Image (cartoon, rainbow, N blue to C red; front, side, top):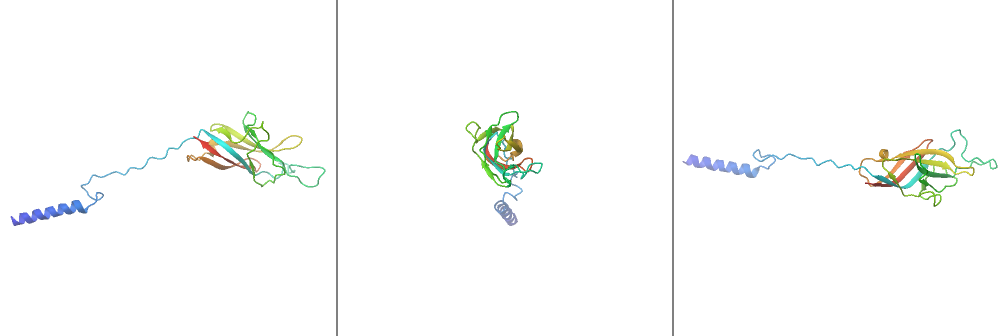
Length: 187
């Protein structure tokens, strides 16, 4: 009888130690919980971009034939181009034509937000996500504008699939033309 009581006391102590001394993580009797990973974030596709600024950061110093942009037969000095930008969807008239920056340096930085006139569109300008626009750089000359370079703006290639609210992205065009577009995504 004494042995049975000792054995019963020992079994009770072992059960109490097992129950109170083990955490649920290493207790073989506890139900195991499976770790559940959080769901991946939902990547939204923007509906459009509100283009707020076009910033020219570089263009070719000379024409493709090596001549300067603004040659003046009466002045021996090299003149610099008088630049402006236009935003245009293929097959349409420009949606925006900017004011002109006189005697622009090829590696200067020029921010365009103002239109050339009240009839030349304005920024901010909404661009639908599925549309492709071109930003043309032109030299504003007396005999007519001279095309300098073009950069293509395809929103699907600019969007980083990160649900961002804004964008400030550099785009390289042809003939050393480099711009930054600044705007806000609309979802």
